[in-house]
Length: 318
Image (cartoon, rainbow, N blue to C red):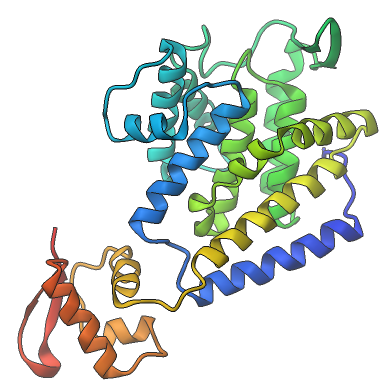
């Protein structure tokens, strides 16, 4: 059964804006940002998603943990970050439309933090604001069937993935399928769904903008709960995604350097290639510029070469 929501004029405007930005990102060779930017964005994602849940570690401390350095902090906060690092390190291995994969991600994310990590709840839960119940989740006996139905919607609906990922995020918050970790799973799986169609979303830390406006995040959830449909939440998250893509484009608005082109090309993991292969990716550069780029790659010990002139073959340094 299709979850209840409406496609509004605001939704359509945001979808159009996001689609234009994704097109521009692809045109600027940004689906795979540089390794430095990718690492920075992963740290921002982990820090922001956990900050929403009350984790007290700073971005600098999260960076230290990513680098396997010791950090002073509560055991729970450190474990949350280490678990999240494991999950985001292998985010590309999760199957977007698999309940089994969804549960496996929760198990890794919540190991040592929840008694039944990777298992649907078997008890009733409610979300409180002070002494008042802000949200009463559906009865536990319906959780498994509701989650399976939600995944069937993902598979069968011909709706845009931008819409379906927002709907999924909201519905996971509404169903509350786990005792703990529902918020971070909703945000994680929206990323998994988006990057399944648009790889750049692996490196878009939209959780940072959610963290910076977490009151609006919870208001959008509450408004959707009250309305009985996820329309307001869809509008909120699409706006977050649109602004996140805008930030990436602004960050990458400078003209590509030789190193930028080399990092992008090498991210495709080609075992060997020619100058022609390089120019087939960067169609707007001259043969002289391509030669200078590849020479720089050798000087920086990123590449080795063999052969002469048109028969020259380049290989990445492993």
